[in-house]
Length: 81
Image (cartoon, rainbow, N blue to C red; front, side, top):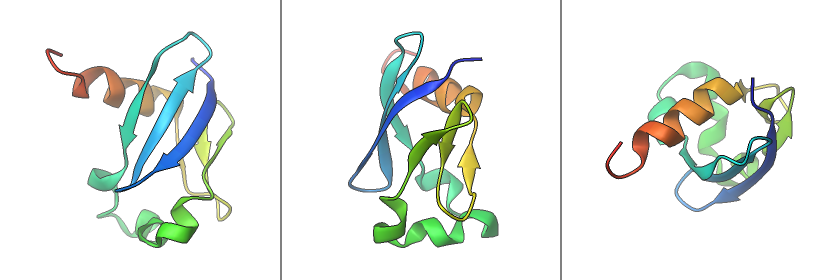
């Protein structure tokens, strides 16, 4: 499992990601905001508190995404994927 080593919040609920294996790209969180578990992430100031944790990314109230989900999303959202 890849480890997320950089997670920089961007505008429009996107995160600039770099993994320990060198995969990099933009993770778009918008499609996941529909679920109640991620409702708090709709607050942009809270969204910007994201940090790498436990191989994935996490927010202060323990909402998280695994590196597997993030890497899959990045690889499948690139042009020509």
